[in-house]
Length: 273
Image (cartoon, rainbow, N blue to C red; front, side, top):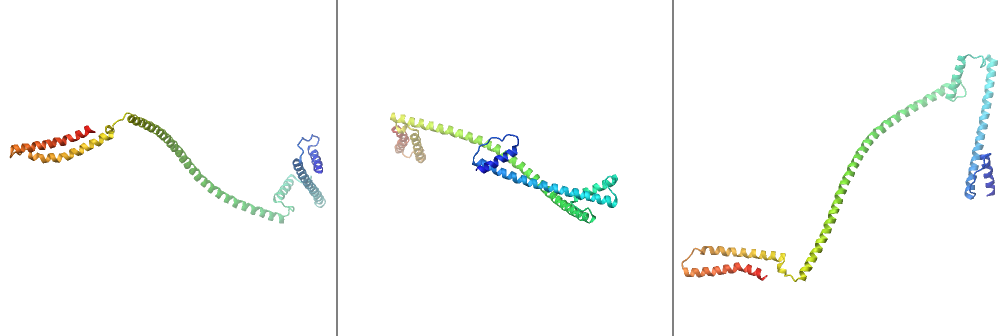
């Protein structure tokens, strides 16, 4: 713990330099995290230093090669950068730019052609990839158009469904209100009926005077009238006959009494009820 804390303090001092180190809570977790950060930072710094040293070494090598080539040109051919014309300088710059673009160290013709061929192959592959991507893009655009149309149709269906649900919801709410009203009214009528039946029972009302009893009695009267109708038809032929006036008169009187008895029977039954 002490060794880690010392290393963390040293690293924080190096990072912030002349600025004061911010205060932080010292515990096992924070010390471990800062220790890991310090190790990672030192590792990256060492890698960076190695990379800088390598670049400096390569720069020194390139500068030495450049001085060597300049000496060779000056001693062998008598050429120097100061004696070259502007066109030669432009050609030389173009040659250097081409070598950098083609990533070749030797600027001989034998090295330029393979590099150009490689770039040509890469260009062909890029064009093929571009054509393939264009075909895929067209297909995606076509699918996107169909998808947008489908989304529009789905949104329209959703809107219609939402409106229909709103209308149905209003109808259902109205039906519920009506059902509540009918239920309340039915309970009220049932209570009133029970109350009325209780009042009738308390007053010793005759059941024969109820609506149901009267309807039943009316049905019985109708049935009796239907039974009397055939008897009336049987008496009709005898109404005009008089072979024996006295006997016929007696028969007629008996038939009239029987008919009157039958006619008065329903009324008597109603009175008894």
